Length: 242
Image (cartoon, rainbow, N blue to C red; front, side, top):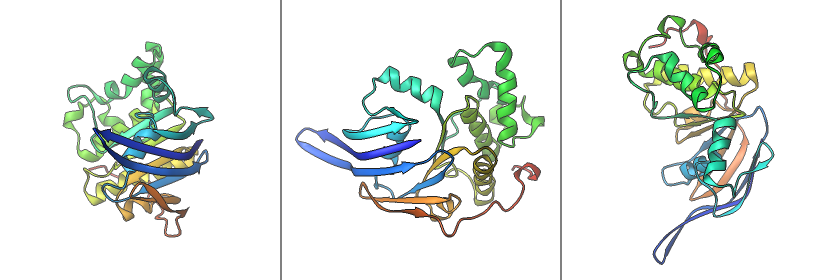
């Protein structure tokens, strides 16, 4: 699924060169749930941008689903993002005066999916994200933070991407609501064999993944199975989202 080999990322400002990523190498197999964890300034956000085809490495190779995406053009990267990657960000990035269904169908419009199948696929994605059906026609600005993040997860799922990339997805949520969102990721991983990469600076959040990669000062300092994995504490479909 993901193969990163000797990824280097540098930025130049005049004569000053800043090394953000230093020969980062790892592999993530299809169906893995991996957390990439590091403090502020560790390089994890830059790595997320490269994994999400929002940026390219200065040197090194990145294979996504067997395709070398490390040297693609901007248009080619946009096509990869649309077809293969579903994003969930700390900021929900929903249209405030659009309904839940409308927000979830937007990626399908951009992908050229026929109108007659969009709503069906959006409804299926909302069910997978455990979003309650009674709120599908509500406007996104009428929802709580936890509900908006569930909509964002459904939007990430609607194109059936090979990879779900979540960047600090609980950063704007209280602890209890964040737990429900993390439950959703665990459910998607266990029931659908989804490949999920979770970017976080919090140990508690990372412990929901089955594997944790620690990054510091632009380099991987540890990579291994998570022995303290937090298992879903309840059936998310029965939870009242607040």
